[in-house]
Image (tube, rainbow, N blue to C red; front, top):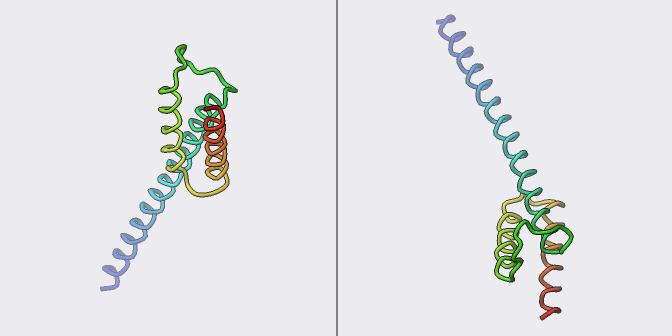
Length: 102
């Protein structure tokens, strides 16, 4: 009986260790993904703000609209917090400038 209890506790300890490792890996991947998305959004925003040249030579309006909607979608994937708020603010500023220019 005592051996069974010990074995069961060992199994549970192993399961807990495995779960903790998986959780740690998941959080690591999530944070890497967040950083990648943020980098991508920043690049798109710089292009839309005209601070960074677009890799596309024919810089037409529809391309800008596509970039803007992609930036919005990516921003929505970011966890809530300061970086996301900053990106949303910059995107709003871009939209205001576009409306003013029309």
